[in-house]
Image: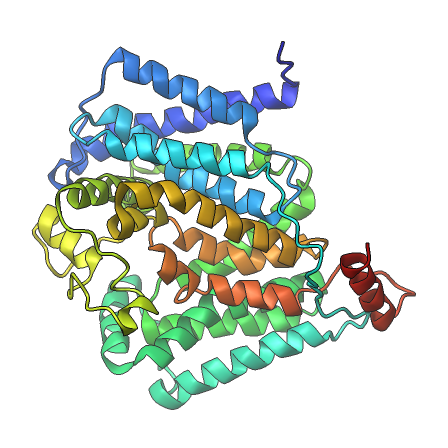
Amino acid sequence: MIRVSKERLLFLALMFGYSGLLVYEYYRFIAPVYAYEGFVWHPRSVFSWGMGILLLVAFALFLPLENQRVSDYVLNYLFFFTYVPVLVLFLGNATLASLAFYLLTVQFLTLYALRRVRFSFSKAVFVGMKTTSGFALPVLVVGGASVAAISLLVVRFGLPRGIPSPAEAYTVRARFVSRGGPVFQYALIWSANVFLPFLLAYGVIRRKYWWSVGAIAGLLYLYSIAGFKHTLAVPAVILALLWWLTRYRQTFWLKAVMGLIGLLVVVGLSRHWTVWGVALLMRRVFFIPAQLHFYYVAYFTLHPLNWFSAHAPFRWWMLPRYPQGIPYVIGAYFFNRPSVGANANIFASFFADAGFWGSMVFPFLLALFLQALDIVFQGKDLRLALALLAIPTFAMTNSEFFTVMLTHGFAVAAVIGLFCVPYPVTTGVSALRRLARAVERHICP
């Protein structure tokens, strides 16, 4: 007999509340207003709804809530922002192919099953820089990288005359893309997604607030020259994450789902006086990536696969099968807009590259990567670890895997985590002695 705790039952109720609100918003607002984009309310059979409810119950009973590993945060985030919206669209729009949903379900079941497998890396040494001083070496390393990246951008683009409005952001972005080559784009994205969030969190945690102020100023500068609107949200996301971890560490996911429900309620009520909340959050964050997940699977079920030919390092020796890029192929085919880059999540993009059988292998590759993250961040400051990974993890819901790893900075965040995220400070023990203990713990039997 399975014994379910009260905490687990509460999480199950919150899961139904979160999913139910998404269904309601799709039925009441998204489908009626954005039917021209393919969002229609055409519910599936009672059997399909019953199956969806059973899947929610199964995931709610076995999702990791104890927050023992960094990978739990990444995996649960993907579940709430990728799997649940796909489930809602699957149930509410029967015109979409069901293969995409079933395939994603198998992938998530595999990922959560593989989470229970522990790989042994006993001979590997993963040691972070440790210090008891307030002016720590890690912040100097990342701060130096930030200064170098922003200095490179200042030399190329100069200082802005002001902060552009949201309506001007697309013009500013087009100007940046036309003038900036790959080096400048990497400098900007790595700074916005990895370097500056790290400095912002480090300044708040160690109460060196001028680091945080400098990081926010840097993010404003990046927005002013490139128009990437997500850079404006980075300070709010990092500060909210730090507050949530500090206040609700032991019940993080219970409180996180409560916060999501509250946010959806507020955004849903806001549609009575403005559509921007629903249009930007509900439609852009939840439903468009979920819709594109179905579109990618439907398109590449009938058309030749990409076979990674558009991604580094494969494109260095392979001719691209789709020279215009996969997102633009999807934008032209489904929306009749060749200039629209329709980016889907990492699972859909991997299907575009490797097809059905490749998608069956992908959870094993992702599980290995998540295990490596756990080793890199094991025992280290969780707040800094999640500040590093927060924005690249968000990119997983609307970008392909290799773009997330390289362009959006996930691999860079892992390297910084390996060398620059300190262990929790313990006074009275020197850095060299803690280093010796860490080496002894990893190498000696």
